[in-house]
Length: 544
Image (cartoon, rainbow, N blue to C red; front, side, top):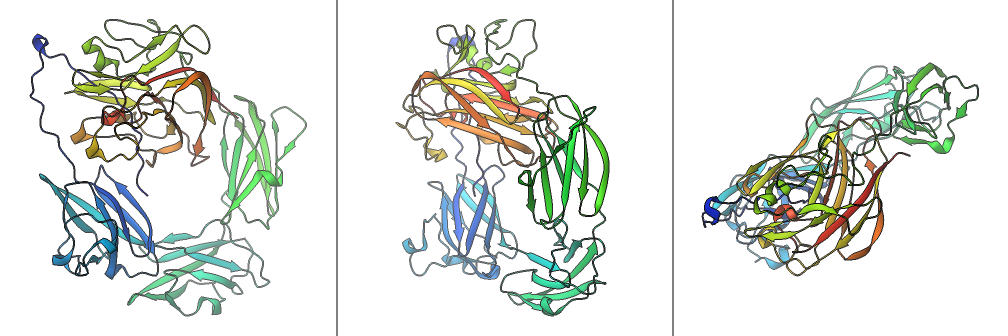
């Protein structure tokens, strides 16, 4: 699946000396881009346009040595130069993109050996080398019971792909010499495994299995061992807490909790416990922020000691009603003169042409006496989208900006709530070479508001310069929680929105909070409609 990137313009426009503009801009750089790719047995594709890398997952029944590409779409004008070593018939591989094999001549051969990295070059004035890798989508399965058929596995098996080793944890006291293997798929679903795992019962010592598929045999070591019962993981939020440990659905789980000093215990009920592949997650609800609690747990036959914990705080965004503004020179800033900056915008660029695309509005608001008004405009040589973000504008690079998204933040809200109005205009400034399906000239412009929490060690650096483009990626491994909304129609009345954060981990603690709003969703590509205007007011972080 293609990496999704959030688009937000931070236009930077410079006044040229003497008030005149010279036509000294370089010719546009058109990057060769793989837009879509599929193969026989296709499962998914991850396309990173910034690093020019593609990762394919294919069905585990197809042979990577002879894998046919069934779809390869590139941007217009790109010449395809395939890998002369990996392609099984290099001379008959098409030199332009194709949507399906049916549109190609019968003489064409798109079969490639993907057992190693494959390099395809896309040529548009310059050469752009793309690295393509392919791997089987394996669904390994390990299901072992005791001699009476009782589920005994604890946690998820540990698979060491490099050393061809699997470690399976089971309950303490289980007789490892009398196990029953219900399922054991180590490699491909069509692989032949010897000996047959269903015939092996004694795992007091490691057992070895030969797994053969596609004329290749790998020897795997399977280790079954008793769980060490190393403990539980506690993750306290502001109004809830999570306890995570190893247990299956057949094991007894009792967890009780209370505010320190109280006599009455609350219990964690069965519908507040979820299970996944030998692990459980229990949720302790209805807690109060910044309060000391304690809990006791019994998992199976093991009783854990009393544990104290303190819930998180519920901090809010500074100037979240956008009432305070300050103009030290030409640039309007969304904070009072005596306060530190929290919100910033692209005004640092547009103000060089005596224009602030982001400002306050005292004629319309939801609460208080002001709202923030983000208005997209075309300023002499560049389209500029009105925008506001938690972070800092760093510097100007030519006619582009360098921005840092994010402010330090270590708590875990569950949603961002706020109010907005929007005037959408038809897109007048487009960029056909970017091939953005929902951003073509004449289409309605879209507003965008999004929020993210992550554990980056520094603010997220954004660059809008095309040759060095670096945008926010919600699929970044550092993202802990994320949510977005887009609006592609005019909404004249103040309307409430709630962005419920989608957490990818309940235990990771964030370091930065990112909140971004733009009147033109694809403004970082300098795409949008002149006059599109987004009003925002009364932002609030929700903790549930």
